[in-house]
Length: 196
Image (cartoon, rainbow, N blue to C red; front, side, top):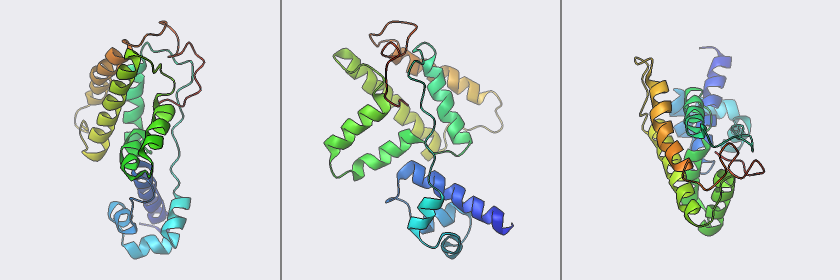
């Protein structure tokens, strides 16, 4: 493997780990293990953990457009998550799971999570329960496909489409319970929250 390939492998591994678990939870030794190189090689490439983080800063996935309609959003959310997995991109739902326990102020962290991930959806009355069910479904899928490697099937060509269709239907069933006008985004198209 060339020096360029080694560097790219280290940065890709670091990007995924930092993106999923945050800076504090990732070690140089872990990055080296995932990349298949020695910790000394990681240090040679980056110089320090801080520099490695700067070089491998995880890119945030593009948020859904604010006026994305609820109809069909279940499959869209699931497909986006599986695509991020396949591309080894950062998974914000999984990162939220890891970062929340580390937060010094859990109440503020929960409010930030709700705004960042669920801000496009209504949050009053029964809708709040439905939106939290949506979060549970998405966090569970993120943990399953990223942490446990579930629902991967290199030998099963139709697996991803089946997961999108079937798990997407579960997500859609929750979205369909929200009290919003059909054919619009979760708030009629005016949301500014980033969404999932």
